Image 1: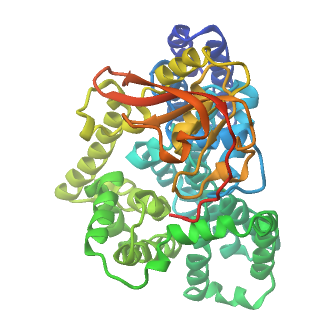
Image 2: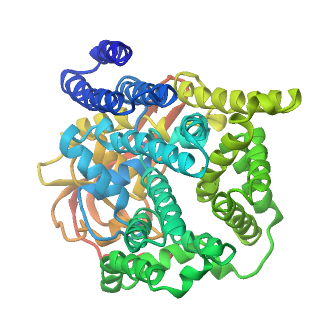
Length: 533
């Protein structure tokens, strides 16, 4: 109890550097975490290892709150887009389901339209993911394995990144783990309640990220290749499937009313239309990305542990290896994003903890050294990831260039230049990221638009448009030193070009934007993009 109180006092002192509103919000948010830790302290009894885990998770969550407020990391373009989606809540969007925008909407109702309001969901979901992983590891093995797995989740670079970065992955990771926990319950007990909850959880997970649909394959393989195959003869698994489809029904109805725009976009992302061509370079790129986001030694040892424990723990095997194999095969046919396969490593953390950490002193000296090295490398990479925001990198090597675009400076400069226009004005760009960041960082957080200049389809194409705002002035923003596009040159009575130069938060990388002050919009025809990727 005193340790938790001390952690909170240090956290409150650090938050004093923030502005009054954010500092108050941080302290309120921090009290929630500490209160949760104190309640757990009372309920957990004599399980000291679990108490240490709770102190670690509460302390880490408080650190992340302070990190978001005090360290100058701007939103990425995707984070800004999901925030913008949360201002336009809907059953579905052009490229994604409603999961991440809904999470952001919940937090910004409490914390406002701030960077903390956007990223608080990731902090909470990461905390919850570790707790679920603890429960799953405890059910599969014992409490020690559960604690080790939950802590290791926070020390693995890819999962540590999603402890702050709010995209579709934090809710996806949480729902995948919750579905795994329910799958284990259903697999062991054949309870109608467990199957029903599993169907609902998978459905909600698909609303967060469509990769969740891959859950059905390992679930089927687990049932077929275990004594639980008799459950395929009872109605409950099929009830779970029906409940899952019921959760997805609003999404389908939305897509039906928007000409299946979401469906075709995601089909385009899978590169199925490219056919059965072989791209060895894509395979090597995907393999390299997996070694990078998990770290090489930890990844190899996880896979080794999964195979070694496959008879004792078939759930971890079927929910890791078949999916990872499919992603590897898919990477031969077309590009696979690095984060698509992260669900394969969640049960891998449990297998690693069970094989190498729980029986650490039974290992030979070489295996113990490898285990320590694997954890040390992963933790060091995670620390470097958090510290990288304070390190100046060359422009072509900056791992955080997506949050170092000088969006705060750009927003202030656009707002200043816009004062030279009449009150009836609008702001637009040619890319969804720039348009989204302008909506967040321009003073007053105005509505922004994204014009189609031969780009792929995005969320702005189903939202209200600027095309009929006749007589309005406008601010048009392009990345780089560019001229006014041909399609827009005769759409305004006149325009002036300004170059805006912004620097990164560490002052090393310069970004250039072309800002056009446009007068008296003449209107133009709205043309929907025809490209989905």
